[in-house]
Image 1 (tube, one colour):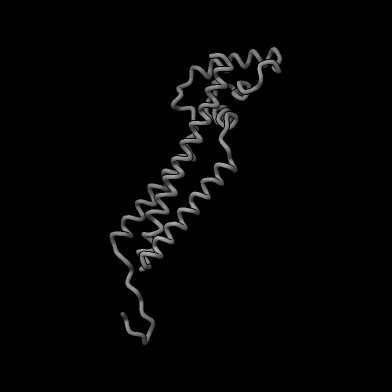
Image 2: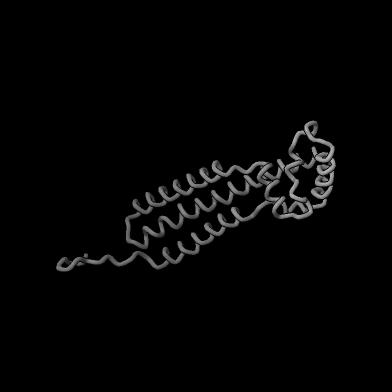
Length: 168
């Protein structure tokens, strides 16, 4: 694999990682907004309208958090290269050399770049992307479902009456 091909692979990996984060984050936001928010309102004895309002509010907050996360820590080819430098010792912490323009590199940089390109092509593509953020979002989605189901099955909480007032 040439350094130019490796650069293209790094850019495709960054695109794939952004897409996977967006899907996982959207599912997590939907799980929280559509299930956990209304389930909490149901468990607290709120009306159906308030359950819907709670769900929409929680969904909006979740989606806003996802957008903020993707904007504050954008995933680009350099981020994937830094991840690979940390995760794969065979790349000799030089993966970012694959992203440098070919004409600007000196002789040693070009040799190192060729070595890194060869090591990069030998890696398993399935193991190249960072998974921590994506796993966290899927865990949030699963926990939202796990929390929501018992809340919905248990029914609303009994309303407590203040001392001296009749219970309806």
